[in-house]
Length: 111
Length: 110
Image 1 (tube, rainbow over the protein chains, first blue to last red):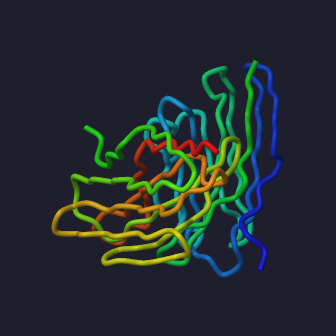
Image 2 (spheres, rainbow over the protein chains, first blue to last red):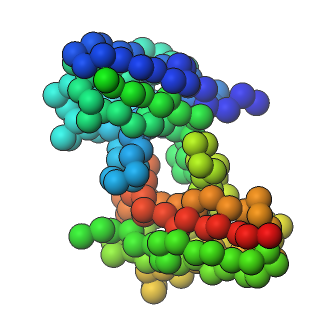
Image 3 (cartoon, each protein chain N blue to C red):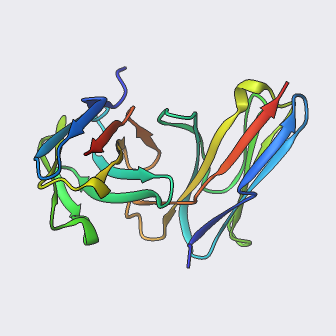
């Protein structure tokens, strides 16, 4: 079985650009999560879908971060406009009611 | 304050030594999960352990809900065990969301 896949693995953006990160969850999983990981803050939840419905829209991340799940096998995270403080690793995870499995992540650098 | 606290923050071992990593939480729990992360790598699930004790090779996870703690025991450590170990809990209510600790960074020296 394929695990969680994420593309691209690395992204470099100029400040103010729009970037879109992609995630494909494990087939059959009904929960999908987007996290951001930095050395200082650790792992922070950005968005959370259950059966394609948005359950959490990111709180403090709402204004420039938008996650969508157009079908059960594909999700995107859009950051618009990017700022240097958005430089981090963005992780996608999926689960079937319990244990979460993570993708390889996208390392974003905003100049 | 931090709902999930891990200790120690970092640990250095000689190969062959054992390690005990702790995770304490201040909220009621629905499930507990332990992850391993190599530098620059993603999170690999080690244990999904809502309660009791589970074993996997040289690793043992024990979660005691009443005492609001979980531990990860590594026996006969190897240099390939080096990396960061993260615990995460799902709070009561079956929300599906995990709250992560900041991790324990382990370095095993030959």
